[in-house]
Image (cartoon, rainbow, N blue to C red; front, side, top):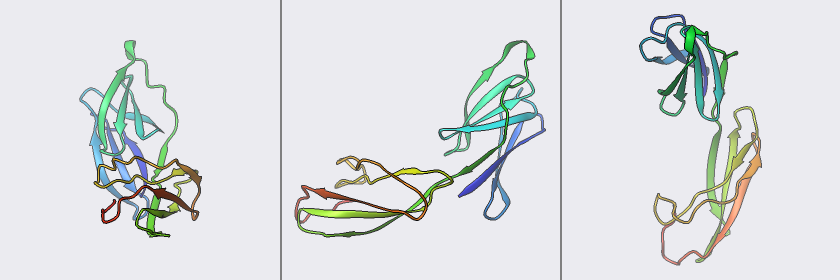
Length: 161
């Protein structure tokens, strides 16, 4: 989904997670005590960084929406982050395999929404959901593009995920 993260001027600092599809608040994260008034937010590589008035920067895992670390700037220096963050999570669909034989198949997918930037798309596969056969090389795709990859060396009569 598409989310907007808003720093709230509360003590302790809070961050609201807003679903942009329904425009409703879906979660609130209260930062560690002593982190007051969230002044700035930035997003990078799956993490949200929140700067607070007390000179702290908190690292928040966007997958779990939990605070995983904090960095303190001594002498009460205010946070140095600038900006706001809108995170759009890419959406893919997997389609039926084609060209299926007892020992090979072509895997197919579609990048439904790239979240605003090109994505590396591929497949993980194996005989269990641990996907022990690994991952296919990623293909750079944008919204609406399909991707596929042929796999071989399959064992007849086995189920693959």
